[in-house]
Image 1 (cartoon, rainbow, N blue to C red):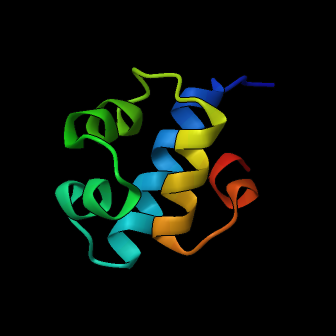
Image 2 (cartoon, rainbow, N blue to C red):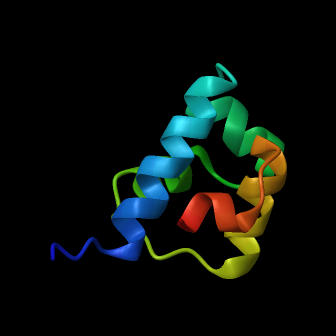
Amino acid sequence: MVKVKLETKLGKNIRKYRKRLKLSQENLAFEAHIERSYVSAIEKGKRNPSIQVVAKIARALKVSVGDLVN
C-alpha cells in the first residue's frame, strides 16, 4: 500500500477543482482571501494549511472540505 501525504493529496485536489472552474491561482486566492503564493505552495504540497484556510478554499471552489482531503 502506497501512502500519500495529506498535503500532497490536498494540493492535487485543489488544483483539480480550481481547473474545473477555470480559475487561476490568483483568482482562487482572491476569492478565498489568501495570498496567491500560499495557494501555489499548497498545490505543490509544500504547505500544511490550517483547517480555516482549507475551509476558505473549499468555499471559494464551491466544494466541501471533505472533497479536498479525500
